[in-house]
Length: 180
Length: 180
Image 1 (cartoon, rainbow over the protein chains, first blue to last red):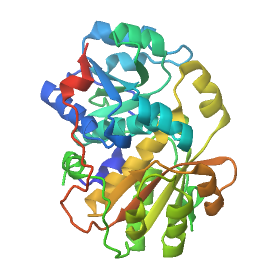
Image 2 (image 1 turned 120 degrees about the horizontal axis):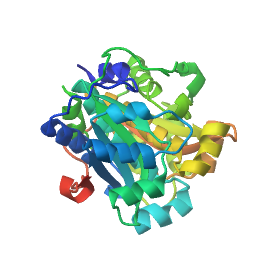
Image 3 (image 1 turned 180 degrees about the horizontal axis):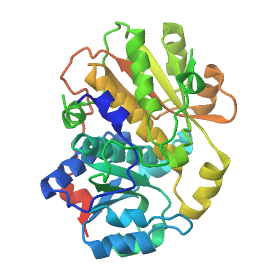
């Protein structure tokens, strides 16, 4: 399956079968994230992997903000929490000149490597950004220097091939592209 | 070629042949970015595509910050400038609760879709974040609401298969992953 096919097939999966993901496959997905490019190769990403049901329940109960129904995330057999650890020159000083918040871009890149590699293995995923960073950092046990920025749920889709709502329409190229 | 192979093979390409990229391929790459997931499906990405040599020269001369030798970028036959257009609720209000700067993550995701789709077609790429946002916005003609955040150069590698320096070593999984 080509990269473009994988990209076109990926949807945000919000209904999982509880079957575990083989450990070797989890490590392949983490490796896909690890190989991502980053500003000055600083690799600001940190990842925490939750497989135990009790830990995942704590992530859902304590690590997400209220207001959205997130119980579906309990069924995902793996939660990957993504965090940023900033380096001084690239992530605190360079941004003063360019205005570019490099580690956020880098985490988007690395996390999507993981998501696309998962899709290829038939593993569904969903980016979750409605998080409570401090409780999440506490329950992971990350040092203060690491800031949680997103959770990606992983698991086998209950209904493969079906887009789970909201499967959003995308803007047309003409709405987002300017040809110079 | 699998997604994992494409991810493992990708390097930041800083030496291009001047051969043009077929228009159909450019549009396939833009489409890969267009299909990315984003917070609340807001699709904050805007893209500007420069193919004319004079326009690319202006991007390099006026749109990058001083201090780094960037002349290699002149040889890349296509420059894609990525910008963010923020939506009120998701990108200005939600971030006050979660601290998650959603559109930056989204741009990382969308840009890397483009990069991986390019790699599969044998097209090299390089993320450039050492940019001068205001001059870049002016020369593109973007409205004030759109903020440039990165440039991706695209073209056929002068030396395919070779990593152009700096081809950074990556941290081991044990350095970045915590198992809960």
